[in-house]
Amino acid sequence: MTEEQGRKGPFLRGENTTRRIMGDVALALMPALTGSVYFFGIRSLLLVVTSVITCVLSELVWEWLTGKQITAFDFSAVVTGILIAFQVPVTTPVILIIISGIFAIIVVKQLFGGIGSNFMNPALAGRLLLMVVWPGKIIQYVPAAGTDAVSSATVLAAMKAGEQGNYSWLDMFLGYVPGALGETSKLLLLVGAGYLCYRGLINVKASLAYILTVLVVTFVLGGGHLFGGDPVTNLLGGSLILGACYMLTDYSFISARGRLIYSVAAGIITGLVRIYSSYPEGVCFGILAANCMVGLLARFEQKHVYGTKYDKDQKTAM
Image (cartoon, rainbow, N blue to C red; front, side, top):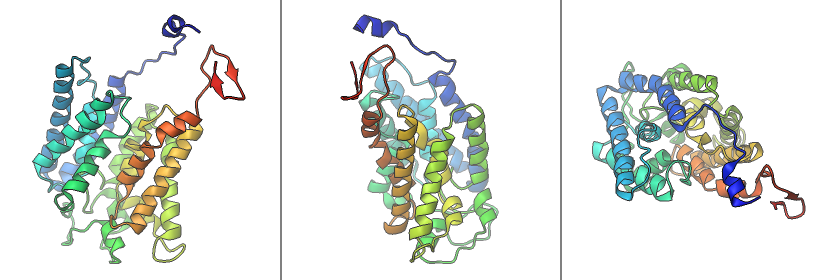
């Protein structure tokens, strides 16, 4: 097949565009955003708006300076901004949100070619930067509105310290617990995820594989002895659902088997970090580590290119 023939097709075209897909994701995050304002006050909205503006402006300025096609208004930067803010507590200084947004868009996304070319999730990478450089600034959690709790430790942090939590499973499901802005209410996250399922934008198998892997690992190895972990608290007490539904399935270009391996690997790392590291939460580390595996998985899971011959021995398109 000549290069000219390759450019002409055949191609499969659909109605979905980046703008439409990212617009749907942003819309799906609105219930959790509304919940964050209810649980943590108007400052949560300030952080989200600041993060979104930072990400959009960073992308716009970079593309203008480098002469690239302007994609800053396709909602991908908006989604990145929302997800960055969703991963930090309401006490986070605004300047750190700005730094995280600039790093996520310019360093992680644009320097690697823009949307679809970045090798890891920009929002998670922005969160990782804050964890590494300013850890003390992003662990100052406060109780959610409507609770009588005085302690500001998250559910997972309290469990890791061997303390008896004051929160019921219903509290954790509804969001009446200390935590990052967008992770506390599993109900509102699932409402948004349900909309994305309706729109066909979530890989349900990958998300479920990731969640189940984390629960199995933490149940088998957690709790100080075999099969002594608490799977319900591990499901409802942290950012597992946020990560599984909104950040895990960015990389859809690998095969179904590759996505399963990717999800299980992310789940294993997440669970091990929760159990054996000094961090109570491992979603960020698990998904970012799996992101770095995508190139290898894509290499071994290459699909046959339509219109070419296939060499079974060399497993390459001729």
